[in-house]
Length: 68
Image 1 (spheres, one colour):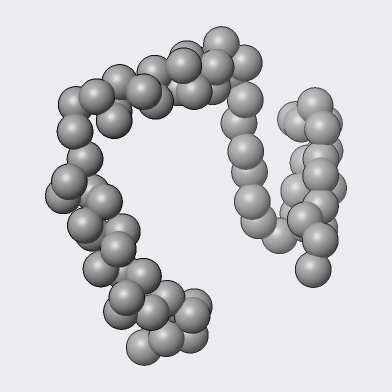
Image 2: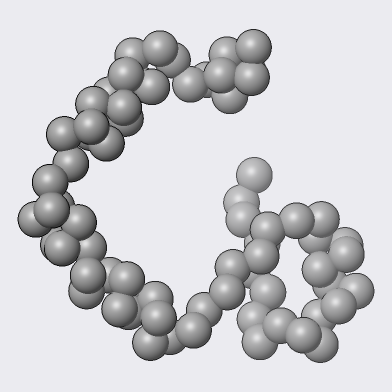
């Protein structure tokens, strides 16, 4: 039921599963620059109750709100 409510179709789940199953070592190695960038920038993303996040704004460098 959760898949249905999230709009996650059977076809989409099969596609993702096929991509995972057919992933090669080279595919994973191609991700190295992206992962290194994440490590180098030491970014942390927090998603949650906007009011609670703003209550603890002092622990964040930047707070962004996602559009509806």
